[in-house]
Image 1 (tube, rainbow, N blue to C red):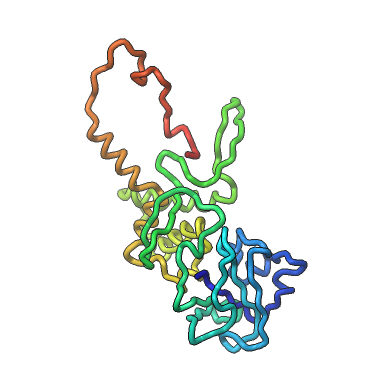
Image 2 (cartoon, rainbow, N blue to C red):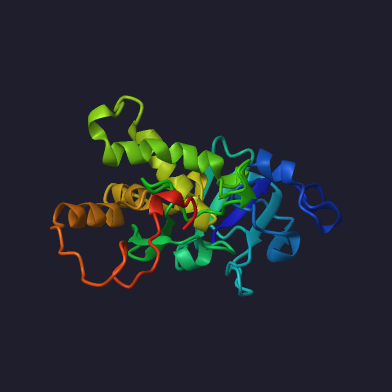
Length: 272
C-alpha cells in the first residue's frame, strides 16, 4: 500500500486552490519529485479535525496507484496500525506506513516506467531500475530528435534528464575505469543518493521514502547502481569480444554481413 503523507499546518486550499496543485508548496514540503507525475484528480485529500502525528493539525495526502483507484486503507492518524516517520523536525512532513500492508513496487510505480533491469530489493520483490548511461553513450531515458548543421539526426538526452545522465558518469567510471577513479568523491552517502535517484525515475521514491520504506540496503545498492550503467550487458559483450576468433570470410558475399545487409554501429546511437 502506498505511503500516506501528513503535512502539518496546511490546508487543501493552500495546497491545491482551484483543484490544481501549487507545485511550489509541494516543493517546500519535499514532495515535488514524488508527486511530479500526479495531478489533483489522482490524489486523496483529508483534513480531519483531530490532531495527527506530532500533535499537529494538518492535511493528509495520498496518490492513487496508476491504472487503479487504489488508495491507502486509512487516510488519517491511526498510530496502532501505522508507523509514522517525521522528516526533519516534523514541522513540514510526516510519512505514514501501513504496518499490515507496507509499500511495494507496484504501489509506488509511476505512470511511465523506463526500461532496464529488475533488481530484488529489501522487500524481496523486483523493482525496475532504468539504464541511464551505457559506455557506448546510449540510454533508455527520453531523448530529443534534432538535426545538426550537417543535416544529420542527433538525439541528445532531454533537458529534464541531463542531471541524471551527468551524475551517472561517476557510476560508469567506478565500474568500468576503477584505476583512474576518484574514490574520495564517491562516498557511501553519494552512492546511496544516486541509487535512490535511479529508483525515483520509475517510482514515487526519494530520500524521505528510503528512510521510511528502506527498499535499498547493503545487499542490493551495488546491483541498483550497476543496472543504471548496464553493467551486466557490458560485461557480457566484453567477455564475448575477448573470446572471438577470426572467422573465414564466406564465399560469394559482399563485405560486411554474410547476407549483404547493413551493419549498425551501436556507438553511433544515443537512445536505444
